[in-house]
Image 1 (cartoon, rainbow, N blue to C red):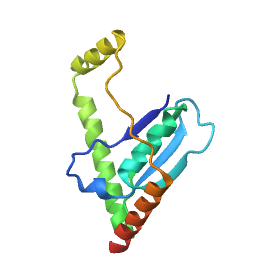
Image 2 (image 1 turned 60 degrees about the horizontal axis):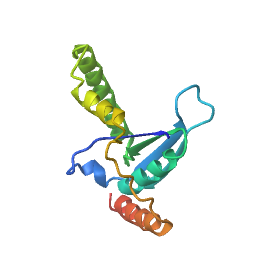
Image 3 (image 1 turned 90 degrees about the horizontal axis):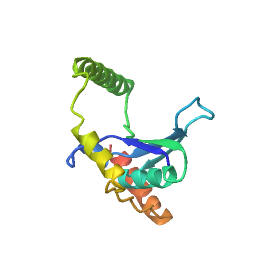
Length: 145
């Protein structure tokens, strides 16, 4: 079983409506091959596809929004925002209590020790027709931008 990484966003985030891409790569160890980028997809389709692939393979899948930029200045702005967010995260980590609050981890480990899997139901893998319909909606979204 592989790993799935994505943003945890509030239900009303405007980013949820953007096109999303999936980057598949080797899980851990030295890179044995170049990552594969697929998409764009609507977010639910991207998550379901990524989940279906990593369920059976030792891969990491990163599902992230595709930010259509209309100028180099927009790209620079996104880069600056990402750099600022990384600096903030680094500062938070450095200020964090070294031992932290492990309540959530302990609860999850207790469930696993008791033979119970955490309640996570996989998303159904989208059909080709659903993906094609999503491509059409993404194209309309991008045309309207």
